[in-house]
Length: 112
Image (cartoon, rainbow, N blue to C red; front, side, top):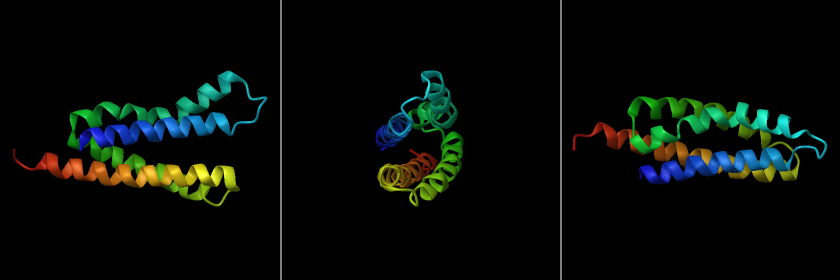
């Protein structure tokens, strides 16, 4: 189960960064794309080791972070079609990741 959450988190970061680069205006400098990608998706990428180790405390913080990303993606659903299509994918990945992480937290609390 934890490998699914790690894979889902990795997919969310990849889809987010690729969408950010794809939807950027053509004359955007490379440095600006890199800085924006790091500013937006580095906090999610920091939690990749937490999903592998199944640390309950870090997974709880990941769930809090996902709520912020979820609210941002839901507001993107009101944008025109290229952004909306990507937002549907990001909302879906965020919801699935939240559920998987909650299952991991619940399983980590049980005695072996």
